[in-house]
Length: 132
Image (tube, rainbow, N blue to C red; front, side, top):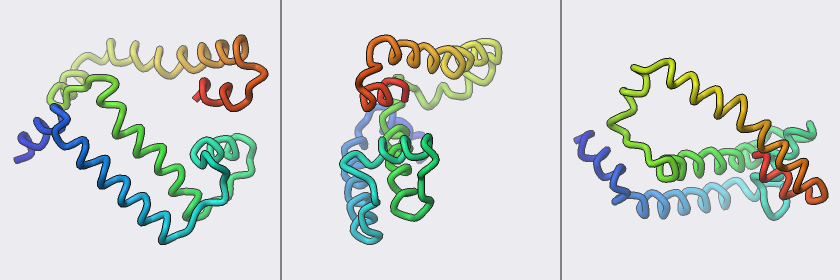
């Protein structure tokens, strides 16, 4: 049964269902707890407020950050073309895994920061988006 579900996830047959269910759950939670105290783009405003030290830990604001995490978890496999059945093979090559992690977490963020400083210093929202 699990193999069949993984096969459906790999072929994105259930992706529209997950998107619709996620939208319905998000709207229901938003109606239940109320809208967060952020502007038009709550996830970006929440991340900016964390960096500025003005973030308020309450249920609506935490749900806003959950949206970012949920969207990332939903879209990343599609963007990276991940095969779920091959995830075990990645752990068997620790050298390659460490090299990839080094570039993803130590090199890429600073490269994006450099690009943002060069090209987007006058646009704070675009600057934040590129760095993120």
